[in-house]
Length: 219
Image (cartoon, rainbow, N blue to C red):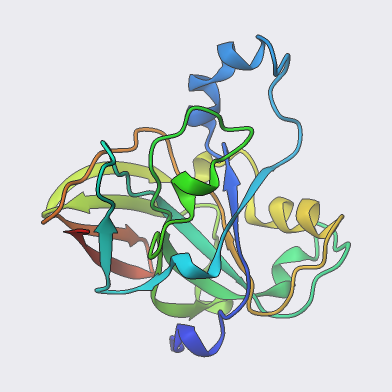
């Protein structure tokens, strides 16, 4: 049985950049040039601020004056109890359940320093439609995810292609900060982001978790 998301997932929204193999490979050449010198060895984190929270069937404003807006299908991991320095072996015991996240962003030029102005606009993080308890998800690292725009399939990938598993992410993050009950870990968006326009209906679908629908509207 699924649960009302807003009763449980009330904490911080933590995003992870470059957590899909295809995305990392796309940028590999640049990572060997200045200023990076090498690919990231730890998860590249960013935070979606509280003003970005949005919901199933919610409107997403297309900001005036921007050229492109891109949805980002992602698996959301809702933390069920405080996690500090947990091992990867124990990490999934700290998960309350899973949900769908649409990590909406303006296109970026740097993955090492995700821009606040690109990621933290009002309503840029729809979450939902519900929380599916962890016990009902056999393997969070083998879930197909799809992005539909106006009923047309525009992206298709699987969490099996993530660089780090859900358990590895929880272990690596909890090594240096406590994850609190109610926090949501956004496990990354795959390569191949698409542009959407005002008037578009955007749906993110993940195996076993349903479909998160939002509507793009002009500001």
